[in-house]
Image 1: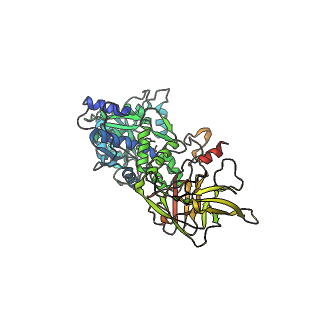
Image 2: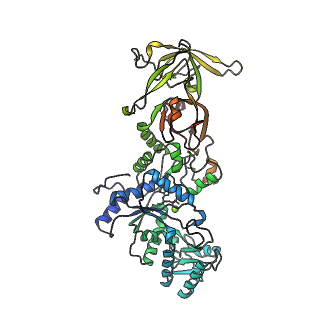
Length: 567
Ligand code: ATP
Ligand code: MG
């Protein structure tokens, strides 16, 4: 559980400031209570993590942990049980506990219906029978007021009767709606007699066929908050213009617990999308392999990619909450996962694009057991044994036959250290006669330079990772790049759809990598740093004992490619 100390003197954001003042002023009876209200129409993404960190965090800080998990399941056309289950799994994974406070807006359908009847009887709601087009015409525009519906003055008796019959299933979809009677001339379009109920003959994943009328968000949400005793209903900025309606509903229904809606800016991240609708389209149209595709910003995707809950929570804590919309660099998220994995990941060596290296003066049958450090940041993680022999694999990019200036890796006549082992010197290369492709690098080693040995201190400019060809095991490695080529794919400008901005190079599969044999026993969920290559984890879905599959969570910052790019 996230334990952030309550610091009443200087709350860390405007929301906590407001809540602290409300507590001080004893504005409500009982404790501060918040809720996280996902609609079960998709998987949670990192934007939801921001909302969870806020809602669960505030509850923890102000009242010791009472945050409700409420499924906002009032729109059955897009909702289903798969999402209800995955959302719970994700909330738990992120480290939050709702205890016995699991609620469903659909459990309130009967009470919501009663509230609707109450409004009708108060003369504050009516059944309208305009069709969709007519309703649109009557609504007016941002600059022109709307017009009253000819049905607006139906009697209370007629409205009660029609609404009963709507519920009883006497009318077909779209023939009638229940509307609040507020003000068709209001400058706030949300107050122009908003629809409260629609007729929809759809199966609901919890209530089945019991209902054929469903409440709208603007009606169900404030009342659900009130029924649960929510004191502060935290939502994103797009609901700011709905706040007068939120308050109208609670006042008109004469509830005794009036929650306060406070809006904050949603999280936007560069090079990705945080909209369930668009993410669903990417999944359904096959642009990604599923909701847990490691390129997606979903919590399932991030988890499969190797992100930890701690890194995500630290990121959310760092960005904080504000009132103004902004976009966060995806690099900042990457920074937080590097920080977290740096201290916990086991260092190993893995060669992604292998190049054979033969040490001519190393005895053919000889194998040496060398000691390698598991994590220099954490000595308690100990050491492990790695094997050195005459034939090794190194990274193709660590050798250049014709090296540019400042290339401190291997090249003919040049020396490098092999990590945990010896200094080697390149003698020659062996090439394929027809293609000219480099097949093998021939070297000699200096037996006096073994790491940890008497002359280990001899310095050379480059140190390379490697694996012993006879000992290494084969694995597939998946490298990921941004899902989109542009920083703002959600901003569909010039008719360009986000699908047109997908990055064709977002996934690179390397089927022929070699890793240390100790990784054969690795379990899903273990984090590794492949030295010089980045942080990796076993793919939870596709990896098996026969075929190891690793995902690169995030690359290390690579100084050489920066030099190269800067040229
Ligand atoms: P989407 O636009 O992805 O469909 P949503 O707001 O419709 O998101 P909900 O399931 O209704 O999704 O969201 C649950 C809660 O999470 C809401 O309180 C919502 O405001 C919040 N939330 C959703 N997206 C973000 C985001 N990008 N940043 C912060 N909070 C978010
Ligand atoms: Mg929503």
